[in-house]
Image (cartoon, rainbow, N blue to C red; front, side):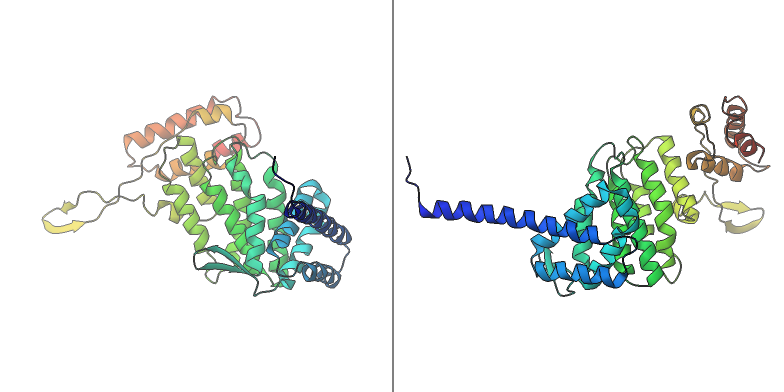
Length: 338
């Protein structure tokens, strides 16, 4: 049996000290968070957070633990999350050392407030790795909305809040579980709330990072159902990016010679109209993006000279609406008449 050494005792004591230190640090962070409420002034919140940061120094482990404690609190206490969490983080973003560095890859580092955003995403953005996101995202999505609203209002930290919103949108859009359970609805609702704010921060009123995210979502190389295609198109439409969706859908036909004139007239083939008739039987509210965009798509394609296939598909859609048991639910009859 190996002899018991002094170094063994030292190792045990050091380990115990580390655990005790982390426990006490978490308790202190909770105490400070307790002291920040809806009535707390911004200056008071900033002073309290500065006190925490002075104790953490340049210890990134403590900073990570601080964010972890705050995120746990946000998930467990909805009232605090709605009223004070954004105030806490605004104070943190304002007070953190802008020269604090975190190495994330070879030659690549994050500084100051970007470290905080990374920690928030790493800690609370892991829900995208589960088949059913459930209610897990509600806390982080609510925080992001409140933080972005607050940053837009005061004109500070908008960049950091925007990074958080963009990061969450990209993580959700890239998740292999996006179309599982109600996950796409969660993603879409968050996008509807966030994208107009993100667009508003751009000079041209259009976020290029959102555009890139949506293009990548549309081009993802795995098979999708017809419903999923309609959901994605509906998202583009609701985010005022119909042109972006159709950008690569136009196909030029074979040039047609105009009578007795040797010139070529460019023509564009109308996109094929596809309808998902079971939707009218299974969904009670036809204002849902997946249905409304399908109706809009068919209506736009219908012309006097529309191809027979388009006319047939549109007629089938109207018949499915008329015979649906949900015709008189919500405002579905009005949708049909319109």
